[in-house]
Length: 94
Image 1 (spheres, one colour):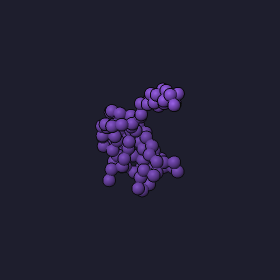
Image 2: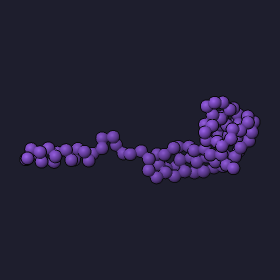
Image 3: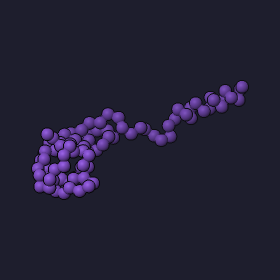
Image 4: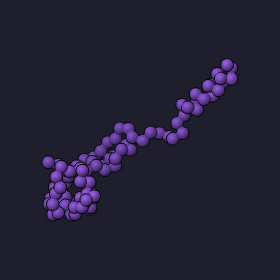
């Protein structure tokens, strides 16, 4: 019995320490900007846009309809300023 209690006493502090480090995530803050982009290419994997800061891609599943090459759309970009969430999020504005 004494050995079991001693083993349990030694195990509890080890279990309480997480060797993997801090958990990624938590509260995040973003700066949002809205701008126009032009559809540069459309393929099975997604859509390439040309925006004010260069090219970026979105998957087809992120859009309700597939735009045509040359079409201009308004996009909102959320750029992370604090935390460890997704660093950049694009969404099409209606």
